[in-house]
Image (tube, rainbow, N blue to C red; front, side, top):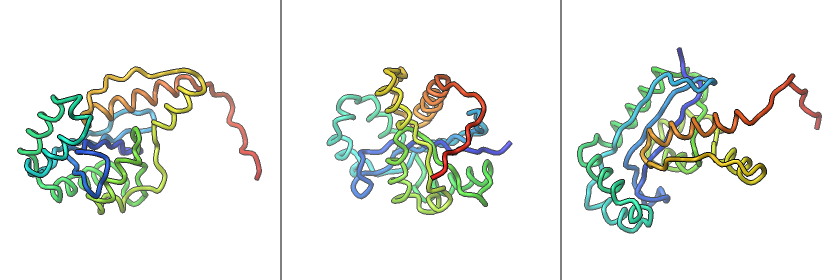
Length: 186
């Protein structure tokens, strides 16, 4: 079975691709029933002397020091960025039809896309211009209907993807479907 949706999450030192560095990346291939076809996860080698000051400057890692420690340990043992991108490309080739643009999905996935553009340019070329952003669903369901999905907030790449998939399933359960309606003409 081939994947139809490429769920991706990255852990970074911060939110600015020109300054901050990627630390961990995970990808999950699913079908449209959100059944997992395959998973990939890798740390990204980064020099501690470069990423430690960036992590120290990020208020998130002051709040979650355990995440900081585990990511520093991961990066010390991880593979170089170019090798991780090659592994991501191999993952895509093995689990998707790469003759078609891949649909990227996740929570606030536009932020991950900025880092993909900066650090994984060959992967970027495989991606569709459209993205499935679960945070857009979150905004609608919380603001309009007062429905909130309870997150565990582990802030590790694979866990965040699994949580994003569960969150989208939660919102989709709220949607009532009937017969397809024709699109209104412009």
